[in-house]
Amino acid sequence: MRSGGCVINDFADRDFDPHVERTRRRPLATGEVSVREALILFVCLCLLGFILVLFLNSLALILAIIGVILAASYPFLKRVTSLPQFYLGIAFGWGIPIAFAAHQDTVPMIGWILLLANIAWAGAYDTFYAMVDREDDVRIGVKSLAVLSGTFDRIVIGVCQAITLLLLCLVGFMENLNGYYFLGLFGALVVAVWHQYSCRSDDRDQFFAAFLGNSWFGAMVFGGIVLAYL
Image (cartoon, rainbow, N blue to C red; front, side):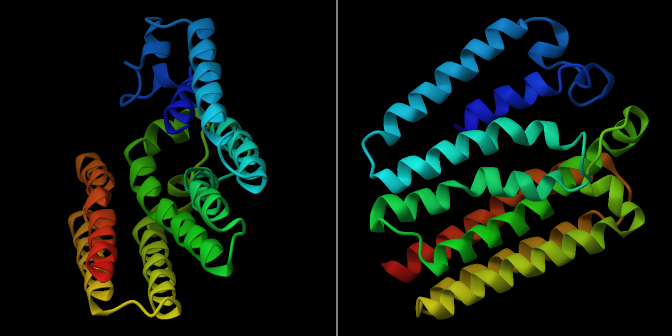
């Protein structure tokens, strides 16, 4: 489904991508892949995902169907709202309630808190990503949180990072996780602070490096979870 989301995103942006430096070499933008081929691939990927959820319970199946709608509709949000990053967080994080539903046949409060944390995290890392394209997006009329926030971009990202970490701390207290989990969160905080520092100048390469560097943010959180359960 993540791959399917990438395909439908490129399909939706096929008329924009040729005008953006970072995306002008995408297969649909160059004509290397046709619109028909892209849609066929998207449908096939969705069918594979649907086959997998047939092995799960009815609640997980219902949530998975909603997930398909979220993934398919996200790419078009940047035409109508300046907050597509948060919708991306819902679409990419929808696996959280599906996982709880599949395992517990319900989605407890902690599942929704984790989803909120994921939404806030997407607001941070995808705004770094959008800052790379901001000049091109303004020129062609694409909306994003990076465009909306203007010179307050790093402050907005910082707020999203802080909310993410606070919500993850709340999860740790609710689940009575040990100090290793919070050590992981501290590592994620260090990564977030470094990203803020490295992006103090208006440099596209630094923005993109910070976006990619969010894998380290996630790795710190994941590492803390693993150590907490060993």
